[in-house]
Image (tube, rainbow, N blue to C red; front, side, top):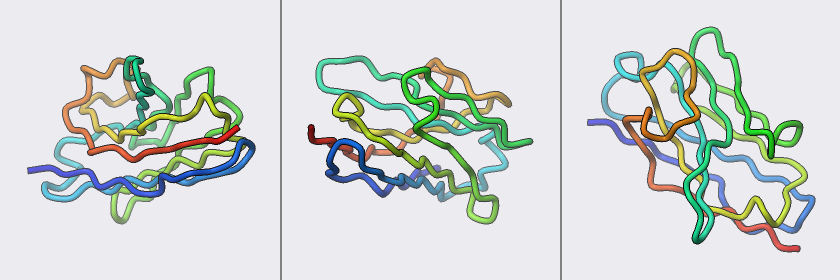
Length: 126
C-alpha cells in the first residue's frame, strides 16, 4: 500500500512564500514512481497540473501560471518532493495534491497518476 504525506500548506499574504513537501510511505517508491507532481484544485474548478519532476534525471515541468515563481525539487533518500512557492498570488489559493506516476516524464493529465495524497490547503490573502 502506498501513502503520500503532504505538509507545508497554510495562510499567507500575497507576495509571500510557502514550501510544500510530499513523502511517500509503504512500498518502495522505486517500484511505482518514475515521476511525481503537484496538482491543485480551487473551489468550483477542475484539478490542474502545477509542477512535475521526473525521478531520473530530475527534469522539471511547470504550468505557465507558476513558471518563475514555483520550484519543484526532489530529495532521493526519502523520495520526498518539495514545492517552493514564491511571490504567491490570491489566485494560487487551492488545495494542493501530491501525486505519483509510473511515466518517466511527469504527465500533465491527472488520470496518468495512480497515487494521490490527501491534499494540503494553501490560502493567499490579497
